[in-house]
Amino acid sequence: MNNTITAYLVGNRIVILDREKANTLYFRDFYGKFYDIEKPKTPNITKELELSYFDTLYLLEKNVINVKTLDNREIDREELLRIFEQNYENFRESYIVYRDLRMRKLVVKSGMKFGSTFAVYKFGPGIDHAPFLVHVLPYKSKLDPLEIIRAGRLSHSVRKRFIIAYVDSSTMKVNYFIFKWFM
Picture 1 (cartoon, rainbow, N blue to C red):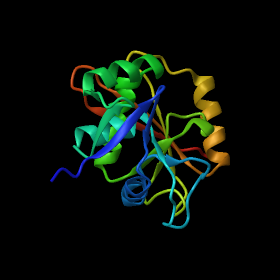
Picture 2 (cartoon, rainbow, N blue to C red; picture 1 turned 180 degrees about the vertical axis):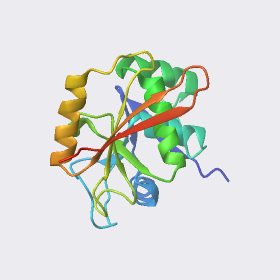
Picture 3 (cartoon, rainbow, N blue to C red; picture 1 turned 60 degrees about the vertical axis):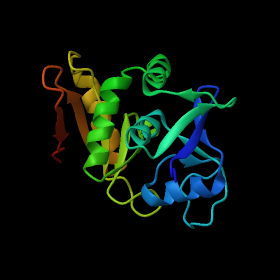
Picture 4 (cartoon, one colour; picture 1 turned 60 degrees about the horizontal axis):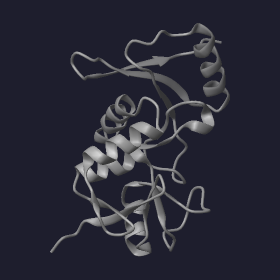
């Protein structure tokens, strides 16, 4: 019996329409987000689940989901990668960082509202606050001191540690730099 969950490409979004499976997937490891619910506190949510591009690729690689078009054509990893790279700048490097964080048993959500790539939780949204903001920079990019100061001030004001991540292009190893602010 196949236990994979079917997700659908709807426009440029990935959605799980089966509400029961959506609930299970979210509350198992906090993948995706329910429509109209920021941080669910009770496990009785019956809504569709939208997966991030990062969640989608990770779950596909783990054989938890498969992705189809609304007319039931299966979409493979390479086609998804093309779609994600067209819609998300620096997707590949960001995904490598996402995967590294997930493999460390951390919960990874969008950090957009904090001006970073990811907000990272030890337990999950609604259970704890994200203690880390991780911003992924391309390997050959230059660090702008003004951006570091801006990010540091914001992360300090929301009581989160600011981390810059990059993927070494020769080893594909993720490197992290954490900033500590002195008062």
